Image 1 (spheres, rainbow, N blue to C red):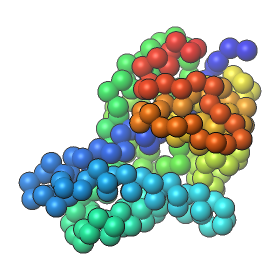
Image 2: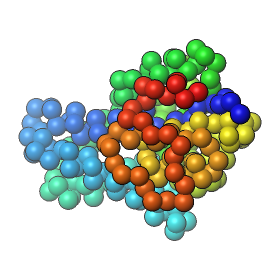
Image 3: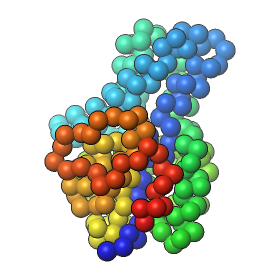
Image 4: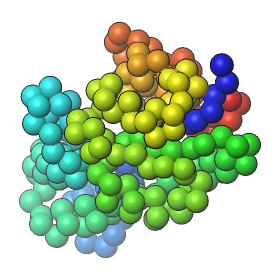
Length: 225
């Protein structure tokens, strides 16, 4: 069966989650951050994701902005950074994360061929709206779907259900693309065709399903459709 819809995770897949810490570290007066920003960015992302999983298991849902703030607070404390102004700056930058360089051309290539493209993200609607507008890719997206409609974070099947509800497609007609191995595995277990964008060259997660394709970036997505 042919692919009719290409669904993308947002953070880490389309948008560069390391950019907030990296860009802030380059600003004058941020010498303390400049010394530790890679570790802070890594811890921030890890805690952000861990908190989504723990909240989903516990049935204690909140929106993604809350876990983004909570993850940053943990990462800043771990890095020995007690700076309210820096915290505000990092959060401001996170709202307008840049897209990875290959994203605009990749989306243009797909939509010019008649493939519907959309986002399915843990992100809160306001976060996603700001990021999409900042990256200038809104005209290439048929929908921006937030887990807030399901009230639980990925990889709950209730989140992946949103795709069929929005596009009236069968699972096997969807190509799902994520930079998170666990997300690509969850979507594969759900029944989507999946791509893991393994930018960091990490090992495959040992889970109940595995992604169908592994790529280093998004450049070759069109070749899979």
